[in-house]
Image 1 (tube, rainbow, N blue to C red):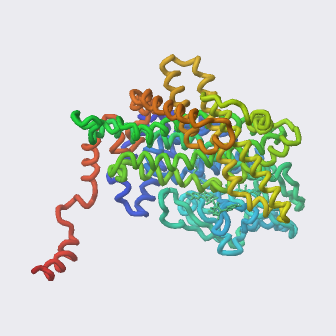
Image 2: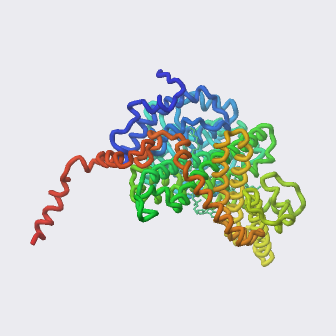
Image 3: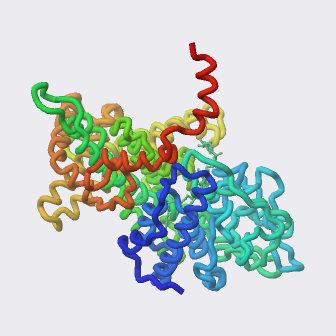
Length: 633
Ligand SMILES: CCCCC/C=C\C/C=C\C/C=C\CC/C=C/C(=O)SCCNC(=O)CCNC(=O)[C@H](O)C(C)(C)COP(=O)(O)OP(=O)(O)OC[C@H]1O[C@@H](n2cnc3c(N)ncnc32)[C@H](O)[C@@H]1OP(=O)(O)O
Ligand SMILES: Cc1cc2nc3c(=O)[nH]c(=O)nc-3n(C[C@H](O)[C@H](O)[C@H](O)COP(=O)(O)OP(=O)(O)OC[C@H]3O[C@@H](n4cnc5c(N)ncnc54)[C@H](O)[C@@H]3O)c2cc1C
């Protein structure tokens, strides 16, 4: 067995058969998949060795090995779900004995997480796949009773995984106990053929993520041992007794893990886009500022700085908040392990709104970085289009953004009611209780003053939502209808909450560590944090004017300070993206390489196009020439 030392970037990146002769954009759909499996298998081997050194714990932040594969795969790794959801679901939801059994082959099996169906993705209680206990044989019988019950979307399901964790409605003695998770082998380990009773395949080409091998899976009287239900939280005994979970929502724990992780993931996606666009903007000379001087670096246009520096700042915001949210997640998981689930609703609410905001922001900011590079940003070789399609998929997967914001809104409304009843609240929402005492406080044009103002917006909008729901109820609507009628405002409350959290955590975490940093570093990090907070105060000036005592004069001063910050950051802009320390082989961009040889790299890449293998393409003679000659006058 090959034995790799713990991989370092240069070790992995130096492996010859991990390099592509032909850029992926020139391969067919099938060739793309086969190419990533070729590379993914080498990486899987390396990371399996790595992971053996780090025993998988339910909530251990994944290693940065995941990042190296970004450069190698240059697209989504079809093995990703094994690490992102399959193994965490087992370590999170199976008993220790089951974990030992299901993971005994270590990395000899490749798994995915099969929850979404053709007919249901959000509403898990509406999933149609069934798992019915057969008491006589001590088995569950899995079925897909309708076309809409086919599992549809799971990554790696089409042709890569040979096992999966399946979410299905549990039926015991004719009674449905709701969605539960099951460990299911779907392909023969040796031949990789689908097991009898299964229909497997891939779902077809997508906007991006085309190497993720998202697939479909249908069951027809497919039998698994009773012990294959993940039974850490709820159990089905041999005699058919169903033992309820202490909290049925624990079944959804695997999704919380990925949502928490995605904040850090988006920090990294943005770091790549910012590195590419800022470096390119330092190389690209276009137009004049002073008519009698040479063409300037486009990075000297203040509007270009306005487009790009927010991405540098946001990447740091997501990185710092991602660490904060990870610590919260780990603490809550620890508490749950000790039997306390008090903070699970808070963690769910935080992970929902922060996952949504980070994925949405990553999407539009990466697009903004692409557009800031002009036509060359539209080239696949810039890597900005792929970063965009990969990042924006996360707005939908792991919980669609609207749905998750409504989950957070549910928590805000509950917290508001508790605040009005004088109950004490967790620190992350305690500001709701202070609304009536603070709403007329004098505005302070400082980062802390802005954070306090953004919190007042959250409280004010939440109060407005609660009043809207009450108004609809008083007019005769059921609570659920009143909730639906108020959902536009509810989304606004969650968005405001998420923004206030990001600003608060970013500013105070930077402020907390700044005394431990060199003065220069502390100054630059604080500039980035202040830029982020001031940017969003200006973006949300309407809400601040409604819910705080901010004045037009205060806003003018904030605008002035924002433009000062752009000028202060400008000299450090390239240094700041260099400090993301993303190697060219992982950045995969003709526009963003460290050496700045943009035009040479663009030409080198263009010449790799198969179309450039000959000066006259055969289609001229086959199709064009007859037409031209026919119409030649
Ligand atoms: C090398 C290592 C790499 C690691 C890298 C890690 C990540 C990498 C990045 C990406 C991964 C790669 C590819 C993408 C893979 C994508 C996978 C998927 O998409 S998996 C499928 C995801 N699907 C969803 O998220 C479904 C969304 N729907 C739901 O969560 C629920 O259905 C919904 C919407 C919350 C509704 O729940 P439901 O029970 O029907 O109704 P309620 O709204 O009434 O909720 C009832 C109460 O339950 C609480 N709740 C709900 N969900 C949770 C939860 N997850 N945790 C805790 N609590 C929850 C909710 O707050 C209600 O509580 P109260 O009644 O208010 O007290
Ligand atoms: C790239 C990618 C990878 C994926 N990987 C996996 C995977 O590995 N495993 C897996 O199980 N799934 C996976 N998924 C599926 C993903 O989890 C679902 O697409 C997601 O949960 C949304 O469900 P849906 O697509 O059925 O949309 P729906 O739930 O049908 O939502 C459609 C629209 O209806 C709205 N809507 C739905 N419910 C409500 C509500 N209660 N209130 C207001 N509006 C509502 C939504 O906001 C949305 O705008 C993946 C998806 C993508 C795009």
